[in-house]
Image (cartoon, rainbow, N blue to C red; front, side, top):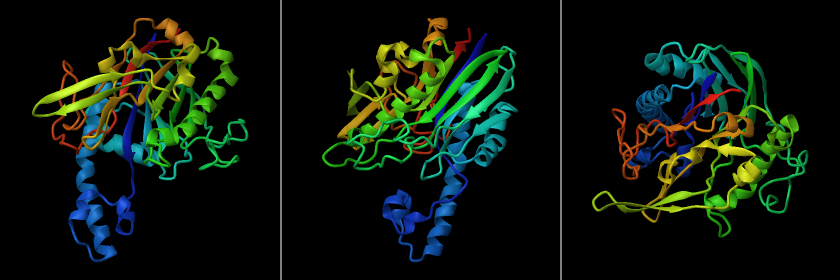
Length: 368
């Protein structure tokens, strides 16, 4: 009995405009910087027009990527609200897939921009087995003090009674053909700008580590040390990686890709002692990436930020299953390693429009 489970950061599915760029250039879109706008009212009109015009292409591409993923259960990141998700499904997904995801779940978390994690589910798997909702829980209110995770490395930006999760660790119980399955969906702290001589990844590592420790504790408090025999999956944008492909060269002379592995990561908390399996690790090293990171020509790499982690029980029940990564929604600026299909969806741009800056990951999983 298989269920197809995917994860996708769909990048800012919002129902509101952000006019903060008029007073803060750091929040201003680059195209707006080409124009001299004298009044805030004019800025708001232009920014609204820009967003409406660009969003239609973007969401068509997002819907195409989701249609290609074809998941029975899809875990999402960067969704503003249930209303945004409903509008997206009605206006875009329906045209690609028909009446697919009637079950939708979202609980407001801690993100300052109002982007949350969410889950969409079909009513039946592709094999015709019913997908039944059982229960949902948010862990957004847990603090560092409650889980005894506060430490000096966090003291610069956090306080003991601050909430651990920047968004949430959403816990969802379902039954697939009557068999229990638990989903954990999270979106860990993003890698921000360099600070105090550290790059963005290093500067934010203590918070991601605390989030990962909290997730592991939540799981083990329910299923026992090591996850016991529980059938559960952890999905999401973890904003960290254990390896990367360093990109060199360029379009004219060709690209080079050098693998760098065994990097220290918050995700070690999940993979050490085989607590969880990152199923993307079953793919060849140059096929594991889900995001292209670049800061000009000086810093470029492909890495995995998007994960489907299986519990030990599910890993044993699926020894030969392989995940799929859908990359046709990537912009043309993203270099693909040799041998990987480079097909893009119609109207994809050099940098935008695109389906998302992330690639969705999906896998068919047998439920024991």
